[in-house]
Image (tube, rainbow, N blue to C red; front, side, top):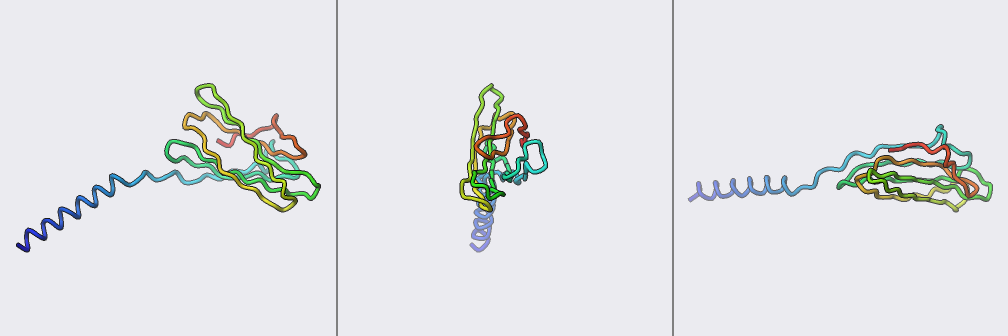
Length: 135
């Protein structure tokens, strides 16, 4: 009787272990940091930086915009995504909180993204011609 209970307990443990391993979600990729400081997209008055990672077949991008100069204008970030199927997507993130403040947002892009470029923005315009590829 004790042997049967022992074997039944072992079998239940194996089922729980294997079943738990099969049901566990795949781990997400570790986040990769990026910054526009020191690049052709770097503008005085804004610091745009963040990270990106893959999860569930989608690209997630966190963007932070810091207003670095007390000049009464907003700092911003511009993202441009190009997809393998020919589609595109644009995103803007503006920080109107004043010098020293940071605004952060996270965006999710479809898995067929080909590349993602970014630019810093100040005075209501962005350095579109100097965008930098961040993915």
